[in-house]
Amino acid sequence: MNFNNCVVPEFPKEMIENAIIDNNLLTMEIEFTRACNLNCVYCYMDNNLFCESRECDLTREEFQNVIMQAKDLGVKTIVVLGGEPMLYPYISDMIKFIRKQDLYIEIFSNGINVTEFNARFLFEHDVTFVLKMNTFIEKLQDLISGKEGTYAQIQEAFKNLENAGYLKEKNLLGISSVICNQNIDEIVKLWQWARERKITPYFEIITPQGSARANNGLYINYKEMKDLFYIISNIDRGTYGYTWEPQPPLVGMKCLRHQYSCLVTSCGNVQPCVGVNIKAGNVKEKSLREIIKNSEVIQNLRNYRQTIKGHCGHCVNSDNCYGCRGTAYQLTGDYLASDPLCWKNAERENYIKSYVGRMQAKNRNKFAAKNYSNEEYLVKAKRGNYFL
Image 1 (cartoon, rainbow, N blue to C red):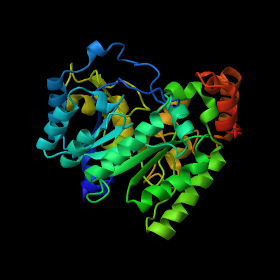
Image 2 (image 1 turned 90 degrees about the horizontal axis):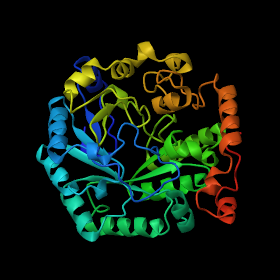
Image 3 (image 1 turned 60 degrees about the vertical axis):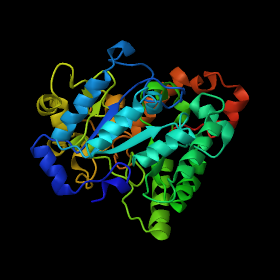
């Protein structure tokens, strides 16, 4: 398998099974910083949870040490999240270090610090770069990002990446978009735009946590979401030759990361993923190997066929899907619960309506209140039906 030619690589079944048996990893997600220069309305972080101060952040040497531990556990790819990775003062040093270990690296970024020089550096070091791009509408992108001028900066970053060579060879460029009430009418067009340029589209459903919890105007009717996934699947199969089964939370991809991955936060906490923000341990106190092997939450998720509850536990697609664990945890408090927002979960309709009713009663105008005028809110959120 060529891990360098895809975002969030899908590993062979045998490789995943061996990783589970040996308590190894195939990828590791890492935050070098939680600092960010935007205030996205859907961001999964509205506070730093276990990291109350940046003074607790790992040093450069500690980050390098945990990457070496991950390599010893079999990691092939380091996925850099944030915060905004390009704000980390030692990002170039870490990229060089990771590549020196013969590991692939993927960076998810808003692109604001991607200058011409940085774009060339990223390309020359074979960094798979996933650029935030939620919409083609300038005012809407600025609105969603919480900062005026964001759209122009994203477009500038894209131009710099293109000029550096990202669209000419290697297939190292992706775009990320969170599907919400404000951009759903553009998602198909955005997907096709990416496919035509051989850019990997990384589109996902909002995980109801952090800032997204306070902005219920972002959410989409689950039937509408299902229809969108199937429309894109048909287009992908008929036009571009990609065949995949529609399933949340990722469009065109499978999220099986809990079987072979984990997240290390900027302060060294290890957790299953950004959505299941349960601390399994800290690399300052224990080795990564020890944390993976002895964490009940990580082991339960690795052995999901025996532990997942409800509809997800006996779904016909359970070999390739176990629902969004982040959504299950954030909405129910149980990371092993059936995904309450999956359209295949026939038991969840009453729960969704009950949950949305509570959210609307508590936060109905939060999206409008986040420093945006009522006119902007009505224009961009005019669909306004939430889940119902």
